[in-house]
Each structure stands twice: as C-alpha cells, then as structure tokens.
Image (cartoon, each protein chain N blue to C red):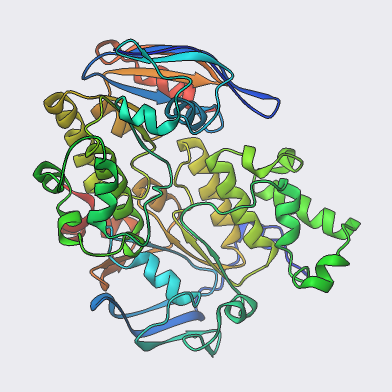
Length: 264
Length: 229
C-alpha cells in the first residue's frame, strides 16, 4: 500500500485550488457496435484533470457503454482513448484499474455477507492475490485509512455492520468508498444517487465535489437537480453521438435536449 | 381488497418491519414513503414473499397469502417490479416480458404494453442484458404488467429512467390502473413522481407506519419533513 496516499479533500481545501487546464482523458472517434447496432457512433470528447463531468442523455444513448469502454469491459470497433498518455483500447481491465481508472456500476455490488470494514479491506490495493490475502493484517495504518474514508462516505458508524443490512443508498456510498481506497485518478460513476433520498443526494453531491478537488470524475445521472448541483460541465449523448456540451443550465434550456431527454 | 395486518419481519435479530398494517382498495394507488433504511424494500419483499415474515397476514380478496410461496402469490394477483430490475440477460426482450404471462393467458405481448413502451417493441428481439439500465427498468415493469395483476408492487420504479419518461410513467401507470382495474403499491423517493400517481401516502419510519395522508388533504411539507433527517 502506498504511504503517501492523499485523502481527497483534505489536502486540497475542498477543491479551492484546481488545475483544470490539463486533459487527463481524450477520446477520439470512438465506435462500438452490438448486433449491428452502433451503441457509440463516432464519439470524441476530452476531460480535464480534477474536472467533474456529468453525462446525461436518453435511455439507450450509449452512456453506460461509454464507461464500459473506458474501463475495458467492452472493446471499441475503432477509435482511441488516451488516458494520462496511455492508449487504453488494447489494455486489459485490471491494468486499466492499475493505471488509475476506477468504476462504479449502476446497481451497487458490495459483498453483502461481509462487514463494511471488510468490504473496505478487500478493496485496498496490495491485498489482491492469494499470498497477499493470506498474510494481510489489519494494522493500525490500514484501520486509520479505512476509518478516514468511511467518514468521508458517511459510514463511520456502520463499519461493523454487515453490508447486506445497509440501505440501498448506503451501499452506493460504500461502493464509492471502496473506489476511493484504490486512489484512482479518474473515477467513473454510473448513477451514483439512484435509490437515494433528496437529503442523501445533497450529501453525495458535496462528497463528489470534495473528491473532484484531487481527481477527475465522470458521472452518469438523470436527476437534473443533482446534475446542476455538481457538474463543472455537462455532455449530452444521443444515439451514441455527442448532442451538445455546456453548463447544466445551458444544456437544460437547449431545445434539442428538451426534445429527446427532459420532456415538455 | 388487499389487506396487510400486523406484519413483522426480521433480518437476523434486527426487527425491521414492526407491526405494519394497511389496506389498498381496488384501483387505488398507495405510495410508501420514508428515508432510506426505514424498511420500505423489506416491506415490499415480505409482501411478495422474497423475505420471510415472522408474523402477520396478507390477504387479497379474502385469500390468505402470508404462508404461500412467491409464485403462488403471483398466481393470486400480486406482481412485483424489484429494485435493480432483475431482467433475464440472455432472454430477448419479448421472452423476458412473456415470463410474466404464465397465469394471465397472454400468448403474445399485448398491444397496450408496446403502446406504453414503444422502445421495447423496437428492441423485442434483442437480449435483455444488452438494454440500457433505463430500458431494463421499462422491461421489468412490462413483465409485471403482462401478469394482469390485481396489485402491482413497484420498488423505486423511476431509478435510471430519463426525466421525460418518468413524467409519462406516472401518468400512464395511473391511467392503466384505472383502465385495467389494478391497485398500485409503490415505494419511491422521487416526490414529484408519487404526487402525480398516488391516491394515498404512507410514511414508514424505523419499520412502522407513522403517518398517513390522502391526496385531497396532502400537506407536501409534512411529507418532506419525514423524508429529511
């Protein structure tokens, strides 16, 4: 485990100091087809370091597929993905994780029979593999680090509860926390506030803004109030293509976006 | 018509559902509201038979269901749209919908379902697993509708669905319920959705029903106060 681990938010004073000029991710002419259907159809976009980007768009626009390609779960038919200088389209999934891309899927997938603490433990880098798992010890440093992250994701008082007993929203937080233990440079979140109450959504929004002080985040979301709360910039996808980009307010008042997505 | 009396359910030693009773009339829509972790999903799972009951009674038109397995409860008129969709990834969209039709006598997908969700008609030959999250949610609702339920139970049905379809979903579920004569029990966090749909609102707090209101006398601020900490 790295000892110089930066805890998001703490060292960046809530993201006050942001360098947004450098592009951490560049996507060029991406195409992917399923059963002859082009789920992503010539998509190009760039994401800056420490940017919080939100992707919206109709159901079936290709949002989740885009994240699948970024993390190597789906391979594109053509196109390029450059992440901090590495071309990702030919790299295997676990190597993409090691390069610093972390992904949370739509439905929470935590280990329900393990405690919250144990869920965090197994996501710490350096605990993978048989030998490392067998000789893993919950030393003071591990415990402190987990408690720190648990506090950020509002689960400090639930560390000894079984994850299966958490509510849906709390499971989402746990999964975000498990991602943070890996300290990725780019965090991909697919509908992170699904199943959360308004209050939990607000808390999650604050959490994501804090994280984006030291990481780039791509969030897929439908809740426009939440999008307005968090987004630096919004990308709208439609039929696998980029429909438009801009601030949450700009895209929300775009006639094309209202037509295909928000409704009248 | 549909009566729940004195329901108690546990997770291990944790008492999750505490003596919950409510009833739902024919064609009535009831929303179960409450913060996360208050037992909404457990309550719905207990009603459909996916979570064991410690005690209590579930009756539909007088028939006791609390001891019956899930498939019998479906046969007696309950249908469930679970949180997280649970569609069959390797079956086509059409096959997925038809899995709900076993006791309703439908040999093919009825027109009104495709009228409601045209995207499912367009994609009827594609595998369920290849649909987007929101499309899978529509598929899960279609699969429940084809069972021609007496009581349609939905756990957070708007999750993952785009805003324009959410608006339509509330209107159409309401209209279908009145037209086809089924009742709705829905757990949902999105207040605007249930305000469009529900006739009655129950608030669940730590496993108990602590508040009940009818649409006519609804005090939105009061409901909101229960939903925030």
